[in-house]
Length: 300
Image (cartoon, rainbow, N blue to C red):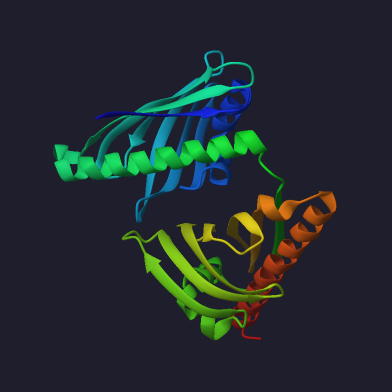
């Protein structure tokens, strides 16, 4: 099956192409994209693994892209598709449409495992939903700018094995008994041991918040997540727990990448105040989690 989606963007084609060309930034740009991990990058050819929402599911696949900045086209194909997709390929086409104006087209060609008609209909629906969302997301960012993105991190050294530290973080169903700032937790999986959704009620200096995150674990060395239900100040929150095993200890690092909602960003002064407020709240909760993990795992 072939599909085409397009949108008109009031921005220069070069700016639109640049947004598409940097796939590692897609979790900041596209709502369905949770994580992108580069596998290989040679000249204009890149291979990466991507995790993204697909309806009520989370799917992961490996894609190869060919970038052509001269014609402003990016072709892609999935080399390790996620069932029920048997094959998926396509092209991003960025075209000038008058001064400071761009037409962006997204083309897909796909098939289903065993040519199953129900699976094909599901792939078509998800492709349509995600394509419309991605085009709208890209239009919004291209026309208003990315907004200020901040990344910050905190670390704690724990005298415990890395797998024990990972288990403390991944088995979040126990957090209500262990973490004072967590009032409620609901944990769901997606039929795969490396992806889960975490619904949580947290307490912070700026109040009580209901949040939902998709979490992805990569062995016992990293847990990354994208928060989908966000607190009032933010329109982006990406995070990770990095677990580095060392001689006799583990270094646990919590990293956050955030962006304010446009309506609360305001002028430079109010932006700085609200960014600091969000950073303080997230950093305080992360440090509380890491220090409690340290205390429990070290038996202090």
